Length: 168
Length: 149
Image (tube, rainbow over all chains, first blue to last red; front, side, top):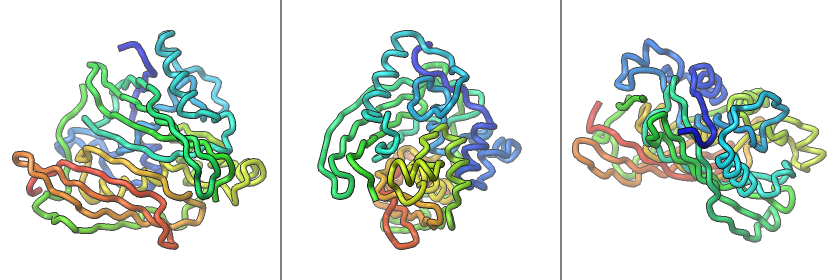
């Protein structure tokens, strides 16, 4: 598959991600241990696919990164931009964006050596009056992570919210 | 490519509906850990690492953790308890912000054990609370486990 963001998974990225979670689980870094399990090698933690953000050239939260991630084809680029715009409506105001929900379905383990292709589409959008944050604008993004053979590895549903004011 | 198989740490025979488990997943959360998560995840929203942006521009009392850091910490309770590669689903709502200095305890409660051949799909409610007992993350998870390990 050529469409969508391509996310190559490697052990260093997994090590850094697991390290940030304070992990001590050998399955994330100790290849000798991991080979001795039925998994047959190191795997990534359950929320690791978030790190695909590093490879999304249109990500709102990329920071100052100037190294361009490989450009997906034009149609994919259009869809990714659209999904980003939908999920982060108003995200140009970074101070007002919060993560409301995150859901994962796991189809098979994420392992070093895989290159995942990430396709993203906007889901539902709705508004409600919040107790603390004023008018809350919610929007959903659905992302599919597929392996080189096109098989689903992880499905993710994310809900973002743009708040009218600071939430304390 | 890719692997199948899993590394369960317990079997569904070891579990009962209503059974609870908990783990302290972070004590006195540091700004350093939040920055490590930003670097690892690629989420560089300054609200999570730039104290001046978070306080003066956004109006928050300080920087605060990425929701996904608290979800990742919650996941650590599940994988340390149940095993690796056993989760089938994991979903959460972010209820409240997690601040530097917070201590988080992640809890799970078995809500169903659904046999599927030699294995079972174990369903759980999940909740992570801070040192004041406030829920910061609530959600659910499911895991495929053998009868015994």
